[in-house]
Image (tube, rainbow over all chains, first blue to last red):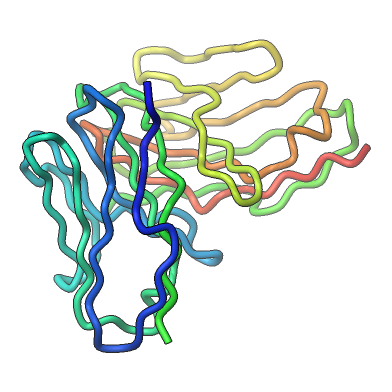
Length: 113
Length: 110
């Protein structure tokens, strides 16, 4: 099986812009979760989508949003970018049935100038 | 909100010694506790996990223990090797909402 893929791998944006990141899960996986990883904060949970519905949500502002398509691919959008949004954004897929390993993608490195 | 604490933040051991990482969680509904290893520049990968109805699980040199009453769980690595050097994350999960601890940077000195 192909692994989890994320595009783009690198992005440079300026403050105030918006950005969309994409994640393609492992075939057959219906759950996609998004995380923000920074050196000081570790892996922060953004949200989880299952069968096109947001099932779980972390404690991030409304500028962070996402969606999932019928083929389980997911996108994450960040509007009105701030310097503090610079981070590695990881997505992870799983079967979504609980007790299941999450498989991570390589991440998208976002730099906000 | 849900929170997972992890200690220590950094750990340095001699090759062949044991390493122990401890975590506590706040959400009583958590029922699945995975541990991930992240090598520099790579994505996190699952190394071992434990469900809430199990107190201990072992896989070769790695073992996890869980105390649900105290909301504590620990990772034990025996006979450490240089390739064990990485950042280790504990996590507590309930229905695929996975909350990670801040990570432990483990260095194994040859």
